Amino acid sequence: MKTKSFSKTYGKRRVLELPELELPEGQITAVIGPNGSGKSTFAKVLAGIEQPDEKKPILSGVSVGYLPQKSFPFRMTTEKNILTNGTDHTRAAELMKILSIDALAKQSAKKLSGGETARMALCRILMSRYDLLILDEPTTAMDMESTLAAEQLIRETSHETDCAALLITHSISQARRIADRVLVLQRGELVEQGATEAVLSAPSKEETRRFLDFYGL
Amino acid sequence: MSTSIQKAIELILSADPELLNILSTTAKVCLTSSILALIIGVPLGILFGAERFPGRRVLLVLNRTLIGMPPVVCGLLFYMLFSGVGPFRHLKLLFTVKLMIIAQVVLITPIIIGVMETFVADTAPALRETTRGLGFGRMKEYRLLVNECLYSIFSAYLLSFARAIAEVGAVAMVGGAIAWKTNVMTTAIMMYTNRGSFTLGIALGLILLTLSLLVNVVLSLMQGRLSR
Ligand SMILES: Nc1ncnc2c1ncn2[C@@H]1O[C@H](COP(=O)(O)OP(=O)(O)O)[C@@H](O)[C@H]1O
Ligand SMILES: [Mg+2]
Image 1 (cartoon, chains in turn cyan, blue):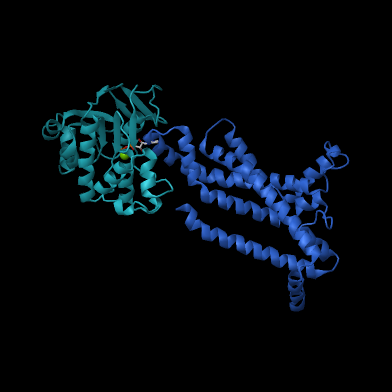
Image 2 (image 1 turned 90 degrees about the vertical axis):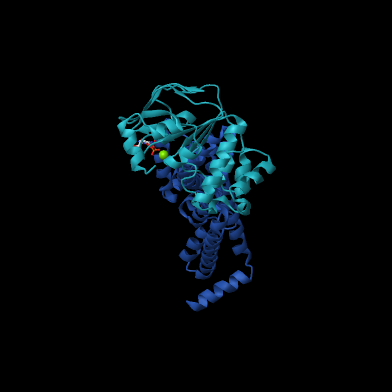
């Protein structure tokens, strides 16, 4: 699927300006870039949470699922939180097991730790199928074991449901592990795009090379 | 002092008919007004907290002004509207329990609106980002928002009930503190103390304090339970 070009300004500051982009179905596109480069803003505009300066949606006719960087646990148990987005109990149990929160099913979601809340939120969004699935740093609060389980889950979901997945991450190694394509943002601009290996091993711009070196690859 | 407290306790235990009448009038006025205020105030408070519309800020300033209004001013207003020279005199509501309830609703609804607005304005943006991200509709979004509000609704209710039961100004002005008719606990304390009879006043004071203690114990017990 294709997104229209757009820009986003907060007050007088233009924080994002992007050209038309292609987000292929059944593939994971990673968005990488340092803090403040506009990754979350990109996600919010795509999800329709924030309006672009053009005041028109930049996607049309597709269902969008969006997992915010900071997820909100509803005041109910972990399991019921997940079941707000679907009625398939078997699927919910399976997702909780994969992300090892099955033991917390009956616990109040408000009492979960940061990493546990992130795992609950990922289970919750994966209960429905969306044409475009946007995940804003879904594993940042998770430990390594959960991160790897979550990555595999995201991979499987994108293959099985043939959705376009947009994975926002500041981890280059994560992009390496699961992304088919990457977009690199710097100060609100797209500086690189292409197949993961091609971009990460031979960036076309000096600036990207410095960013990649800095983040230790 | 200690003998008058003893006498007051004896009066409570003897189930004095006038004391019981005052208690039942108080219960009727304060329970009715606080429940009406809840029914009006909760939806308005949630709306003010969750939505942005022109005039919202002006209404909130007005609401805060009403929260700070001295009960006796509210009483004065209703007195003027319903007394022999007021526009609503033909309704014959002055010095009735009904008008006491109406005055209290005006006095305490703003408290409920204020408590709900503060909580919802804090909670709604994060909740909404999540519900819209999941693709939920407006109805479901509001259901989940109300579900977050349970403890606020509860504490707003108790706060408004406490204000209703403790205030004198409004109920004294519009009710007239008529024995066996519109006398409530606070007005009775004033009336009996003025007559130099302390026993009933102390008995009522003790009951009021105990009630306030109870309300606060229940509040702190429910805080943990309802915010989970
Ligand atoms: N609501 C907002 N109002 C003003 N500035 C904002 C707002 N949201 C984000 N910004 C600014 O936009 C820039 C990009 O933010 P963000 O997209 O969150 O970056 P990232 O997710 O890449 O760390 C930052 O400089 C941030 O301060
Ligand atoms: Mg971000």
